[in-house]
Image (cartoon, rainbow, N blue to C red; front, side):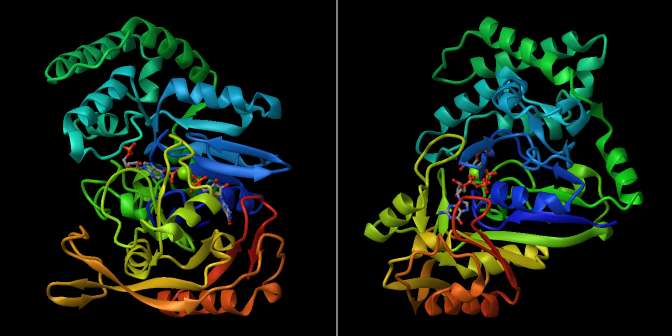
Length: 423
Ligand code: GDP
Ligand code: IMO
Ligand code: MG
């Protein structure tokens, strides 16, 4: 049985959590394959709003199993906090939540290194969520990391101490020192590891291969978005993992020729949180309106998200890199009331207009070329079917489908599970 993928096509926060939650009823297994607690996936149903960071967004459904794959990096402290917050839902984690032994652990000193590195960068800072993501993936590829399975080994403490001491030496090299209380950080870390140990720690690639043979339906849930991919994103203002389709193969051990549908999810406009270039960013009232109506504040850090018009150059690029087969458009409701909607169709450069996503999209190299489409006044949040769409909203969708050469199968008109229209 093939594995379907759900991937963010912009700079993250497209609404992945909501859609995974909506789709889970059709799947047996939901698996996260990269990223870590830098992610914040919001789910809304029955008047409840819940944010998940490490736990897959299928966790609220009665039957689906949830897997944290080898490509994910786990902070046991944040993970325990997530489990604690789920206590009112009476979920039997030992039966529903499985963790790869090959997933890497975020140590307290990884977080400190992230903070020190960002502070040292000054104005050039990435705008990291400071969850220790970069340093943990650096240790993984540098072959120094500690994996979940290591905590079951008898010499695990020695391994931990060796890496911690190395980190402390690295920290001492930074010019401006950050304050921390290591003893207290370590106490919380070790206590939280006990909670992690209570879950089934598995060889997740084998678990998934067996599930595939048994014809189980599997959905891989991406974190972040294609424009934050370490290779294809706006480097260096990216995260440290492969957020694109290939990341699902390395982050779960599934073979590329067993990938089925690739769902690409995007907002009807664009947002970005943290530093880095963003050609269609708005600094005017329109951008302020998008942020206010769309409640664009980071689900992990609470930072205000930067807002701007939709960027088809970037979206086409993301669709190609991922091999997207179906699109899902989120937050169309936020654009109600704009007289005209702008769509970026090309970038103006010193060499003329281009339609491909170039090496650099810094403002000195590209500026957006827009076309304008008529907006709509109507509130979309109560709509339940496509035939109720205002004509201009339907025209916007039709235009995007034509340009992106990919069908838009889901239109979301509000944060709740119910505000989801299938086409
Ligand atoms: P994720 O990281 O991709 O899961 O997305 P986030 O949860 O970080 O951010 C998406 C935000 O938009 C959350 O607050 C959602 O509740 C909200 N949201 C999702 N879909 C819609 C929609 O169609 N309309 C509106 N107004 N809000 C939405
Ligand atoms: P979800 O899964 C939006 C951004 C950070 C920063 C850059 C690097 O909720 O879509 P990192 O902490 O990874 O070192 O930060 O990436 N970033 C996200 N932006 N949504 C996310 O996840 C993000 N995860 C990281 O703001 O610019
Ligand atoms: Mg998010």
